[in-house]
Length: 69
Image (cartoon, rainbow, N blue to C red):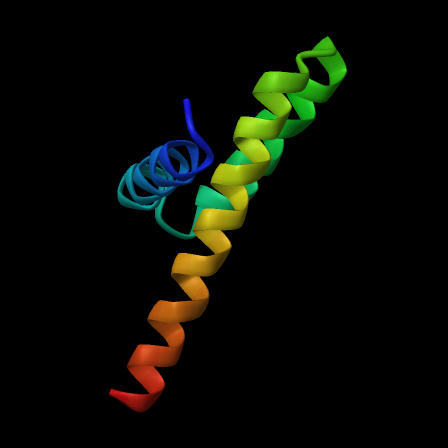
C-alpha cells in the first residue's frame, strides 16, 4: 500500500470511529495503540497512531470551520 492510500485508509477509519464513538474516538484510538504496543505489533501500533492523528486533525479542522464558517 502506498503512503497516500494508507493515509486515506486512516482517515476513513477515523471518520468511522468518530461516527461510532463520538468524543471518545480519540481515547479509544489511543487505547488500541497502547494494546498494539504492549503486544509488540509495530504495524498495528503505526496504524492506530495514524488513525488517532487523523481523528485529531478532523476535530481540529471541524472546530476551525465551526468558528470561522
